[in-house]
Length: 65
Image (cartoon, rainbow, N blue to C red; front, side, top):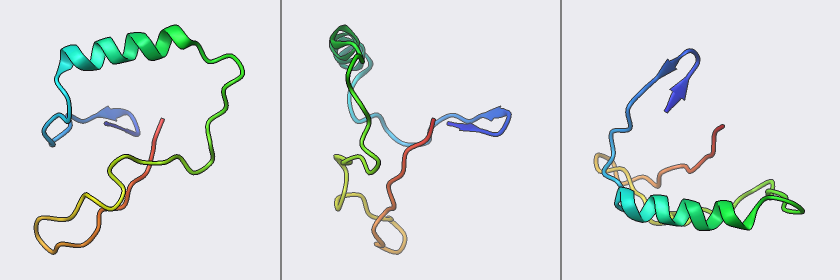
């Protein structure tokens, strides 16, 4: 995860294995990006599912570049 000029390792377990990720990435890359626009508020797969293990509060999902 990039933060200013530093790069930090993720501390969570992977949701999918590395091989499946690379296969999926290849499929998505093959589709190309012509004519595609990103929505302002993307739909997150984990919405309403992720909870804090300490206080059980809902996790806030956000995207970064």
